[in-house]
Image (cartoon, rainbow, N blue to C red):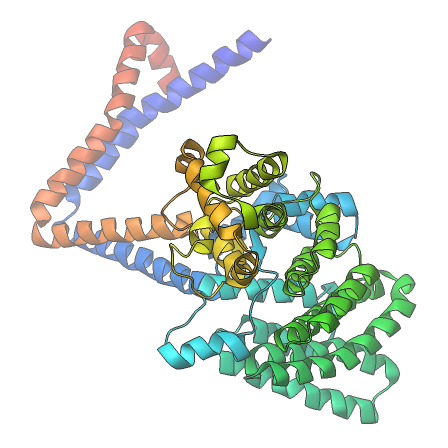
Length: 524
C-alpha cells in the first residue's frame, strides 16, 4: 500500500542521512583537515579564471548577436524538451501564413516596432556621422534591423543556395564596409548565372541579387537619387522572381516559402521607392505608389504602409483622404500608434483651431466641435504622453531610430520628426494642443515620464550572473592568496555550518527511533 511504500522510503532516507552524517561527513572533515592553503588558492584562482572566460565569451556573443548564448541554448534546446513553445517562432509562423486575425494578434502583442518612416543609412544617417563623427544608431537598433532583414528576405530553403550565405553574413556584419563589400559580390554572380546557367538556377539567384541591391541602396548610396536608381534595379529582379515563384508556389512547401520571401522583397522595394519619391518632392507619385501597393498586398500590414501614406497626404494637405485612411485604420481591432492618434487629433483641431481662444472658451464654454478636438487630443496624449513636448519644441529633436517603442519616447521622436511641419501648417493647432495639454493636469502627471524609454537591450541574466560569479571568485582568490590560513579556517567553518542543519535533524531522528533499529539498518 501507499503507507508501506512511504515508510520504506522514509527508512531509506533515514539510512542514507545517517551514513552521510556519520561516515561521509567524517571523511569530508578528514579531507579538509589535510588540505593546505595552496589548495584553496588554486581552487579559487581556477574558478575565477573559468568564470572570467565564460563572461568574456558571453559578452562577445551578446555584442555580436544581441542575446546570451546560454539563454539562446536554453530557449532553443531545453524549452522544447520541457514542453515549452517559442513565442517568436509562433508569431513568425502566424504572420507568414497570411491569416489576418493571427497576424493582428501577434502584432498587437509586439512592443518594439520597425519605424515605418525610418531614414536611409547611407543617404541620411551617415550625414550625421560625417558632420559630428558620432553614430546615430545604437548597436541594438542595428541588430534588430539585421534580424528584420533576415526574417523578411530569407526562407527555410535558403541553405540550398551557397550564395545566400553571403547575404546572411552581410546583414549580420556590424562594419558597414564589410556589408557593402559582401553585397557587391552577388550581382556579379547573377550576371554570370544569366549567361551560362539554366532558368531554374537563375530563379534561385534572383532574390539574392535583389536583396544585394537593397543593401547597397540602403547603405552605400550617399544621396536619395542614387538609392532610387539601385532600388529600381532591385525592382526589375524582384518582379521577375515574384512572377516565377507565383507560378511555382503550388508545387510544394519549398516553392511556397520562396514565394512568401519574394513577396516580402517586392513589397519592401516598392515601399522604399515610394519613400524616395516622397523625399525627392514627387509626393503625388509617392501617394499613388503607396495606394497601389496597399491594394495589391492588403494583408501585409507589418510594413505599416498606411503611416507613410498619411504623412504624404498631409504634405499634400489632402485632409479628406487623410480622414478616409483614418476611418479604415483607426479601428479598435487594430493596434494604435502615435501617427493614428495624433493625426486624428490634428484633423479635429483643424476645424476649430484658427478661431480658438482660451479666454473666450473659458467665458462661454466649449462648443461641440471644440469639445471633440479636446477629446481627440486627450486620447492622443493618453496613448503617448511624450509627443506634446516635442511638438511644442520644449524638448530637442534628434534623428529618429530604426525601431520605436510603442507609447514611448522613441515613438514620439519618430512621429514629431516627420509631422511637426504638418502641425505648424494648421493655424492655431499647436496653440490648442498647448492649452489642452497644460489643462490635462493629473492625467499628464501620471502618464508623462521624464526618463526616455528608448528601446535598449537589457543585459541578459546569465551575463550578470557570470559577472557576479567572476567578481566573487576573484575576490576569494585574492583573499586566499593574502590570508591562506584564515581562509582555510573560514572554509572549514562554512562547510561545518552548511552541514549543521542535517546533523541536527539526524540527531533528532536518532533520539526518536530505537537504537536497535539503527543497529539493524547499519548492518544491512
